[in-house]
Image (cartoon, rainbow, N blue to C red):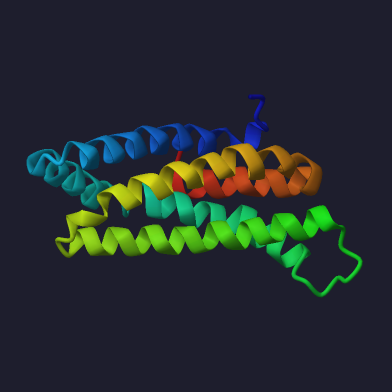
Length: 157
């Protein structure tokens, strides 16, 4: 799939998130407590520096730009603009849910690993298949550059 250059850093991380999601789903299905525990510990250790930051980049750039522009006060907004705003709100809520799953795993509740994996998989696919393809139509070059600069700021690429 052709991807806007400014979104490449986020798309690369999406590939990593799909790998993690598959590992979580597979570990959960195995019912092997050692495998589950090891993967949960890996998530607990990596989540703040990788996934929480990834979500923050999306929220402070993509979601913020779109939500500010199409915040519902413009009654002349096209239906597709309203749908993109609704999609951003849904994705933000999913970020909160994954943050909650992380906090629960950190507290020792490893039973959420499967739910975490399923949500991460579905969430990542939604961003890649539904959100990212339409950003070229909704965002200016300056806004796309802001997304890239936000990625650089947080990741020091």
